[in-house]
Image 1 (cartoon, rainbow, N blue to C red):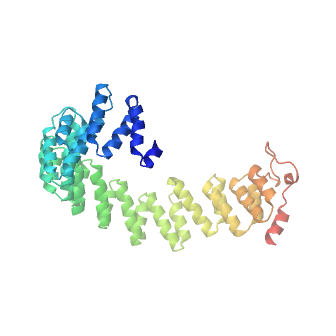
Image 2 (image 1 turned 120 degrees about the horizontal axis):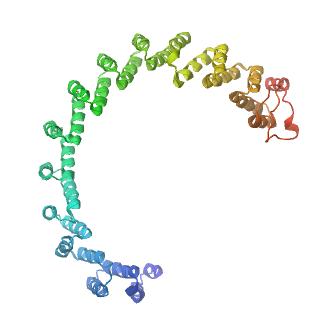
Image 3 (image 1 turned 30 degrees about the vertical axis):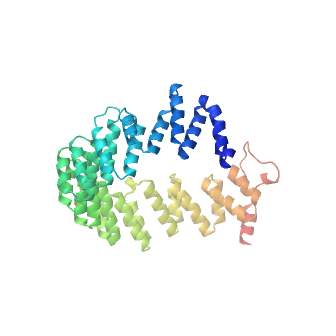
Length: 406
């Protein structure tokens, strides 16, 4: 069939399809489609009449397509008014193709109370008016209770800065209008009104207020909001203080117990290589330390080369310090200490040692360390996955150290 059509042997294809189409809706559809393309509308109508007499339930869509192809708006309108949405869609497409937009809108308006089409008509009519930016038409529909038109009308008011419209609808309890109104207030820089809305529990107004204060760099206002336990205001305030390089302001917040400010101050001190000051800033809040703070302390100790400080923290189970200690031992090229640390069962040290073994050419030993780790004597620990043979030997750090320095 496809071959016949591709070779433009349409008559043969139609003949074959007609032989099988009465009992095959797919074949009947192909016949109808080909005839519609060829403009043989009378033949399509004859076939559809036959199908209707047989009680074929699949003809409705093809009738609509035939009416559309013929430009028969009256037939499409009749089907649509019986509740056929597909016919309604084709009717609108036909009228729009003739630039009869007003006629399409008028017909839609008459169908707003049609039970089967009511919801679709309301949305379609509102969208059509919105596409043409017919704000007055949207207002009339919205006043008549069309919820989609109301959304479009308020969105248009938002675009055109219709403050009065939004204020009126917001006062009536429309949440969308309140959202748009809040955004307009932020754009106008009206912090006082936003603050009033925020005080009523409007979280969106509160968020926009903080954004506004940050954009205007109103440090005093942000500090006032932050003093009321507003986390977003505190974050914005700290960001501005960092941008301004205001260590005194950060110190004041840190002393008030804000760990976020302490971390920001420590990072600022690190940037000017004041590692001792950064460490002092953070350790002063050890009772509030969290994972981020612990990681930052470990990084400071690593940069300072404070092996003993890292060892002390690692012994308490601080994984960040343990990782930083291994990195420091590698940086210092202290292979004996790294070996001992790995033999003590530190996974990070074992991984680092295995990487070093690879680099030094001891591939088998590296694989063994990765799989089993080391015991205190520097031997691969036994286990169900132990590899027999040469790789089960004791790993000799003196040999490895010599190889590493060769």
